Length: 195
Length: 441
Image (cartoon, rainbow over all chains, first blue to last red; front, side, top):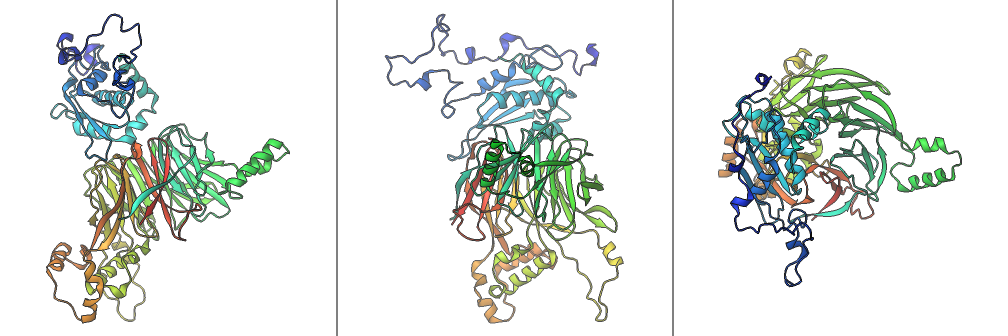
């Protein structure tokens, strides 16, 4: 059965070796045991902190919200591979170093770009387009609309890279794909392991 | 420096992505193709929604087009991701006026057996055109003949002829593109069709004896060509009256008149290009001969088109739509970066048009600039470089932070209209909104 897969024996990265916020930002405050019990109201003792600044950064104030590469990685590394019961992070399909956030190109523009390079598990992986679509859909749905999401195949890792890049970059094709029930089902299954 | 000012946002907006909008050929209304499988018809007089078309398509409606010259009844074609095209009809009774809709509403409430009248105001589904294998990207009616063109991800362009009302026959299936066909556009006066594709090329199609075939391949773009459009034949006069031109400029005008309307294209490669036919050097007709032998037409079928100009590159991401004003010759573009940009064509050296050269009568000694233009141009057919395109106005974040899919010129119809020929720009975005802009000088 495994012989049907493009890559029956992928290399799997040990979960403890995957990049995470806890190690990359050791100064971040560790959650206290009561944090989950009480809503995070701004402290009355700190009149300068606005509600926006202290509440969950992912849900409020689009303009001020800072999103970094680690956050993008966390959004997509938990996507399941369509072929293996493993995450794209543990398969090394998405890597923190291959995520780049580009700020607006001028002071007048409010549009940032997220560029993600994906590394297929084998150079012949026929599911590369589906994986790319999953990553793109995940980011378009999870990030604020001011982000343009460019998903590309890392250079030299796939024979069909140009073709896949063009498809993933084509807004009309991506929109039509998301109206195709069988493709939507595949993508939803991949994304079911997120969050 | 002109500015783009937001005049209105059409109301209510769609709560899903809107793809493109088509102004009616003679009524002050505009039809917007929406990803929620509907078409919304808005008034350009009061900016309110006037009617909707729904229930015909199973997926996104990507494109819609009005049939020209259909007085008394409006006919709209829709192209959908469900691979079909639809034809819809509505009597024009009170169309275009919000008041009429209101009267109907009241009488409907009174319930006095006004059903017939009510139906008159409704869109009637007339016919479905099946044939494409996958998503239809664009539909458009020909201005010169009862022809409709459709194009699809299945790499084909179909031409349909309306033999009588609602009886459409396929007259051509054109398969030469190697990728999705994104857009089709008719020539304003000849039976010629342009198509733009995912294969980075533009093709021109016309009828060779009895069959439609490709008569020109325009390559150069380095990414998907999203949109093509021909200019209006009268655009040449936007450059000024002929008395004020020097001899080189007059020669250029002659070349343009011989070549006919140009084509504009925009692409994923972020460029906007203008293409022009190279007029054929037909031998002078002998004095007695009135008509060229008909065999000439056949040998003449293939055409040469060149890239005449490239507009200044303002966009920073793919350019989705470019629209050429029939009234002023100005161009407007939009795309993924959310900008709307307006461009104008001018003579390169404004002073050269002042008349001193014409006064001198003879052929002026070419100055350095003329020489360089000549180098680029070569033969008369390739003559170009005398005009330049300038970005004259732009607006950032036209639809907040969303992508803008479409932009089109339309006649201004609201109370604030400042002149008979005033136009507005209508933009259609991923935020589900359709916005109306004025160009203020």
